Image (tube, each protein chain N blue to C red):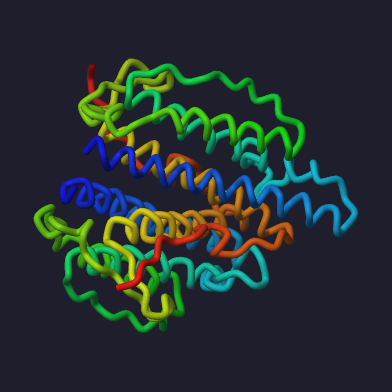
Length: 171
Length: 171
C-alpha cells in the first residue's frame, strides 16, 4: 500500500502543477481584459463559500498535511497571508517542494497510523480511512473549485489543462 | 494494489451516494422556491462547459468504465437520455449497483492492464497510469462540478454533504 499512497501523492503533485498553470492563465486573462489579476483571489461561486485564495490554500494544506500525517513527519507552516496570484503560486511551489522530499518508503505503514484533528473531539481515524474519506476527496474538492472559479470567470482553461499530459504509450 | 483500487472504488461509491442526496436537496430547494426542479439539469458554470446532467452522467461513466477497464469486465450501457433529477438519480443508483458487484480480487493485476480509448489514436495507458491520471481526477472533477453547480444556484449543500460521514473511532 505504501507504493500506492506514494503514487497518489505523485498525482496530487501533478494536479498542483496544473493549478499553478491555471493561475498563469488567470493572470494573462486579466491583462488581456485590463483588470487587476489579484481580484481573482476573492472570486467565488457562492457568497458563503471559500473564494479562490482559500481554495488554493486548502488544496495546498490538504496535500501537505495528508503527506505529513501518513508518514509521521512535520509539515511546514504557511500563514495564509497571500495577497496576489504570484504569492499563491509561491505557496503551491513550496508545497510541491515539500512533497518532492517523500519516497514510497515514507508511506510504509501509513494505513495503520492514527490520525486526529481538534475538530474530531478526541476521536481518530486510521491512516487508510483518513486518506480515502478525507484527504483524497478534499484535495480534489479544492483543486476542482479553483478550476471552476476560474472557468466561471472566463479564464481559458479546459479539461486538458485540468488533467495535464497523460502517459500514453505505444501498444 | 488490488485491495487499494477496491478501496478507492469504495470511496467513489460513497461519493456517488452523496451526490444522490445532493439531487434530493436540489429538488427540495426547487419546491421551496417554486421552480421546475428539472431546470437544474441544464444549469452550468460557464456557457461552454457541461451542464449538471452531463456532469452527473460523466461521474457515473468514469467510475463505471474505470472499474470495467481495470478488471476486464463489461460495463453496462447508459444512453444519456435522462430528463429529470429522478432519472439522474436512477442512473447513479444503477452504477452503484454495478460497482457493488466488484470484489478486491477483481482488481488483482489491474495496474498492468492495457487500456485504450478511441480518442488516444492507437496509443494506450497502463491500468495504473489510467486510474491515477485519468479515472481518479476525472471522477472527482465531475462529482465536484455537480456539487459546485448546485451550490452556485443556491442549493443548501455544504462540505459535510460532500464528504459524507467519516469513519471516526475511539482512540
